[in-house]
Image (tube, rainbow, N blue to C red; front, top):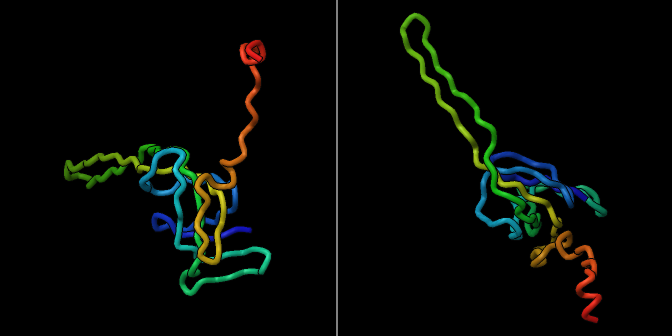
Length: 131
């Protein structure tokens, strides 16, 4: 199953467990957020295309980190006029991991499907000695 979402003025094709970088959105690492609007959805039932968006469909994602992109240089010059301007820009980005694609107006689970499963903790010698 995959979906096409619109985030930060761009469109992204996402599926469960994908990691994407989108324009900055509020949230701390570990928070579950909803991304939307959903423009298209493909799954077991076939392809659904919104007009312009699909009502009741959302994409749940976990915030991984808040980052900044590499610097791009904006350089303006007018030849023979002694005019030069140099300016840089770093875009703020948010790295998110898609946890689940929801339909029919469902809300995301608090931890998401990917975060629920954790590796079992290994028993240390100290714990074994106490028992």
